[in-house]
Length: 480
Image 1: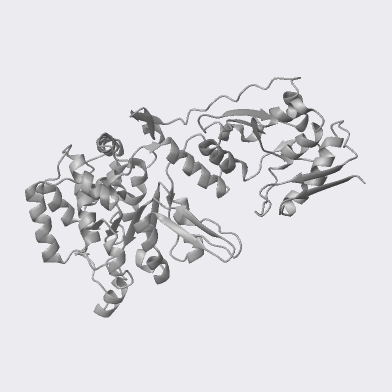
Image 2: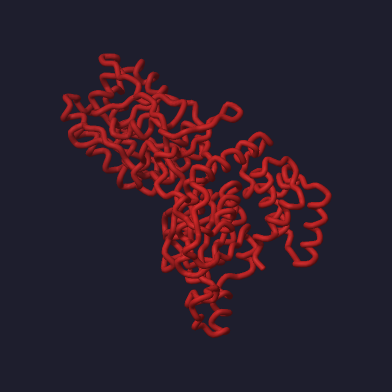
């Protein structure tokens, strides 16, 4: 007897495709074959979900007796959800699937819904054939109509070229917040520049209104240029988070509130593991304002992503790790009332309250912070001295120097082996660092942090070898 079944651990969204496919075929003048039809989704032991199988299933049934077309189908990756009338729609899984296939698969041609074509056109080295309906797809495959390739889209960013690879960064027109608005705070802006050069984690401490958040949010515009792979990773995470992807791709800045739950920041879920703020900040900035007010378990859980640049979500049904190569920025007051550093306002906090406030951040967390900056109060005599454009040019020059050395990672993300290879110090610098290690009881992690920060300072000075002055400046930014 005629039947239509889908096997291979297909979830409800795929089982319902039987009705969508049948309706789409019948409303487009195709006779549904009176046969026993079985669709097998391989591998059969892996659960599958999503509506992006609809179009492919419909094409297999509509063209089942055409052997030549069956062979041609193998040339294409076909994705799309079907409406009951045969129109082809996009689904939330398609972009990430095609992005993964473009990086690893031999399939370079894709038949996709026309609404998704502008986003997919940002992916390099693939051909996009946009369609509106099931009938368009069938007519194209049997050769009755031609579908033009969708034109590739320029990411609308400036770029530099190193070793035949392009690295993109925002133009002046795309910069909204400018460092020219920040008056005074030369030390903080110097620290922000060094932090941006090497993706070094940084914490600002100062009285309310001194410019901690102002500087932190402007750092997004001076981060190093992005490679195409980094841009695609950002797009993939945005799409998984159901965010709208535009042609202008920027690094992300995520600033969760201190009342956020651990699952919302690191990801989680009882059955399926969803991404959190840490994964969404990949290749961008994770900004914690009012750092000591975050829950203790959240701050301690930051150890893994700050050290390994990954976050692992373990559940009974799934274990997934996400890249978390972000620049961490923390902002905090010196005491609960915020007036401890003030020369004009009186601090109302008791010593025990100040100690309890500071103890919320443990030494292992501070040990993972590259730059610690105490900010002074704002004065009417403070003036602007540098713009975002000027800082961006310095970061780009330092970025080019890192790439010319052969570095794949920025200075702040170098491994122990790479530190020994790229952080070359002269004898005076080594002597100063050895004395500092003994005098201040620096851990091996702290010593490596100092070397990496000094490497970024040397790059800003266009020096190949780390000297004494670079080590001294790097040490001045350590937490005392």
